[in-house]
Image 1 (tube, rainbow, N blue to C red):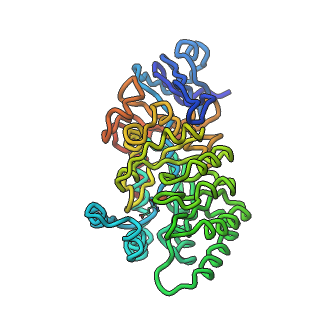
Image 2: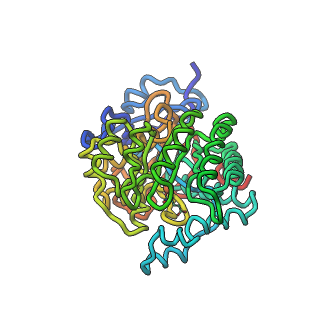
Length: 427
Ligand code: NIG
Ligand code: FE
């Protein structure tokens, strides 16, 4: 057996491989006070007590040793919901909302998502790819080592297919794990379209998307005033038949039957859920659908329900994501989202850490490879700048991630990207 590539020792390790993953059942997370992590070929070979691991591991001449000096070590964050593939910003819209205009009101007047559709269409492909890679770089600097990216700023079949191809280019040689979601039903295209024909055309695309391996999952913005539960059912049933995993933007602003539909269809996740009914959340828990919480969006749209308690009552598996997008959540920072989860949505530290790692991985089909530090999992991990992982919730808005490792390689230190990461962005 070849020698390890890297051994990190004297770290306070929280592996997030605990058995309990449902809200209401999560207590303290298992932590190894003086732990070591052994990495070989990009994967975790062993996690254990420093003294024991060092005594039992044969180091090679090239094995790198890293003394963590007692700092906290946690899995890299998994961001299971972003809209990072786009051009442009929407700063003026933020002020409009502050002055009382509604998010959907702006969209229905041809702004919001439509504004980003126009900006993305107007940009060169190379610009969109570069901007998206930069955003991934920002996420990495804050500890994200796996993320999902959706299409959704194309809206027509042709433009959405084009965005999927761009996403494929973004992903090329990526030093982090990227998952791709087709969000063709993000908004209705502007102009005089026949809605039934449009839906049929979008449904017809799904076979090609799956056959050419252009996406891993399909998603729909299921919301009263956007895509109804009926529209969503027809699209996601077609997606499932094509072999794609399915997910929903569900009940963000009004109860729209999204949580119930996610349970009925066996979706991998339902996301947002601020306006979901208790019965909908209950049905999701029974069907094993993961609740993806987006507290950055709630914050930016000025809504702060204590969602964690409702999810505990339902016994849901909860994940956290940035929802990174130019309209409702322009942040890339998982630590910021985790702070918001704790201080505005009522998550406890153990729940929030599990929601940003292991449960988030499950929401994007990475449960067996990422999100926890156990033998055979990706060597994606973070060294924090404190021995207590709760610094993640405490230092809100700051970056308490001292070093970011993906596949055993360092991608950022003290918030600065390494040369390898910078070169990939520029390539
Ligand atoms: O998840 N709700 C719909 N989609 C995004 C926002 C997209 C946008 O405003 O550009 C969301 O919040
Ligand atoms: Fe979203």
